[in-house]
Length: 447
Image 1: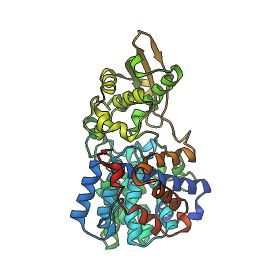
Image 2 (image 1 turned 45 degrees about the vertical axis):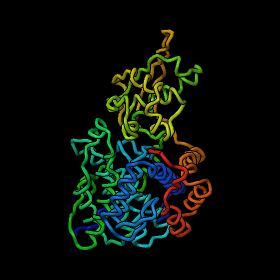
Image 3 (image 1 turned 45 degrees about the horizontal axis):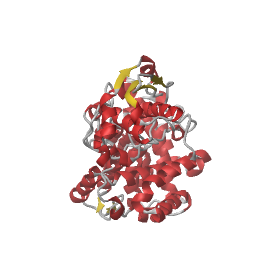
Image 4 (image 1 turned 120 degrees about the vertical axis):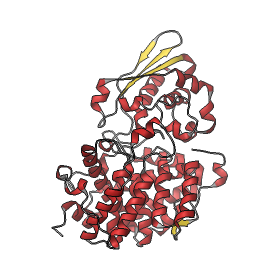
């Protein structure tokens, strides 16, 4: 083999103490946010189906996330990634047009158990995954003609970050990355946007592929090189000096990020003018092309509600915000929400198209029942990397989802275990997450 490529050396040798303190703190918060979304996602029918499938078809004795049953390492990764994807509220990276954390965490979870990693090793691997995932995604988007789901490049992030937990050599790691890149799910994201179903963002399949790539490489299976790693030096030049984990956005609402700029614009007008939904005859939105493609006005499922622009805007106008309960069950048939969703007009705006994907812009106009109009300024989503949430806001988001599902005591214990993870074994967090959500508090919920 030729000299170990620098990205592989970074993936295998980075130590927890090499990370700046703000990156260490961010790794814990990213993990907390992912776990909170997983708890919300575990309440969906999607998650139930995929966990049943993973347990029945994959076998194995590794603990499944938020379930008492076990599966193989690849089966656990599949179920965990799909469970997080089931509720579209996890962190993301604008240049990637997708999510690094969901496939990376999902793949590392079973690998950490297989190789008996401690909390610090797990957190360090997670941080590596964010750095690798950001750069692989950018390289892939620059070289592939179609826009693929997060699982496609997430598989490579899992292979890179998981190789260190598995103790792979540099040569084995190089092959694992190549296997993951070659077999990663090159699923078309806009297909799922146009036809929202349980397919979602490919995170589970990417995580499963990354875990499988590590196992195959350890057995001697070959697959090098990974083109996005070895043939795209422009994207790797700042590795170790620019920390992509600090450039992630977070979601205040559990719907597609592309729908959130018009929601913010609408809520600003709602607050400024003290409006209620009955005063609004119609909502008009100007945004980028991808946002206007989220065109489901009358969702029949939580998946369709999450991949819509008109429905979340209508929810926000009627209810003053968007919670998981607002995109499921009775909310899907609320006549006032449907009235506003049906009447919404969406237009592409060149200024928004030009700014995408690094910025997501939207402007909202409310046409009132008295014939007057109120127009917002151009808005971006809340909690972007340039204006991130405070620690308190992210922790409050976690508890707003976790407390009703698992109880305040268990939610607090999960938070405490994550806070101390760099100095403790992984076993306490594993114990807390290898249990189902409290069925009594989630009966009948689909999101």
